[in-house]
Image (tube, rainbow, N blue to C red; front, top):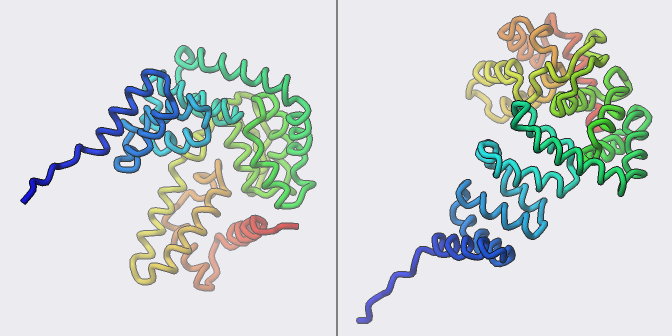
Length: 303
């Protein structure tokens, strides 16, 4: 009987061929082989050269799809940060480009900031009318339908820093703008390190905030802690109902950013009230719950 000859490790073979192609600047061949290797092992070690190959092909959206699952790994070295920055700038998303640099020290971010400044200047020269029109529209979000608001918001990445500030700030105290969008705009100002005071309509009052002094929604701790308590209180009795309640609470608690600690000083009491409310009982948070329900409804309005 003939001997069976084992095939070489396909993943390693594709990786080795991809590396050779990348070193020669043959991005198409490199990307094809790295993609095969990545199918077998979706690790940072393969994602990094795959992203470099896709950037070389100017396939920036595809490159970001590879890098974002390994975001923290790509933040460790300047070379990898450059890969991600090139991709964000290649997709004309200046907001995300600035956002990823927020926690860098001044020295480390200086070179990257200069690149973003240059890219924004180029965009203003080639897309100036589009950017100016978008600023005019976004600065009056309350005058548009919910669907139009969503469409405008989806384009916000193209705005240079100064344009984003001009567009976002007027909406922060406008109650005709859904709270979900006010929170998102405030968070974008935090992500680009905007360090001037703004007026913000919170749940029960107008506040003066400095966006750069806020933690950012991704790093805010109180909301996730409350959700963990809610999940624990629900237990395993009705997992489908529990999942639905937690998902709804995740959205509604986000409406309270950045005032969660002030509005919910006792998380355990809030969790119990939340459960009681959904069982038809009266609670001290009923006014807040009614507001959250109304704001949730706005998310699905199209007119």
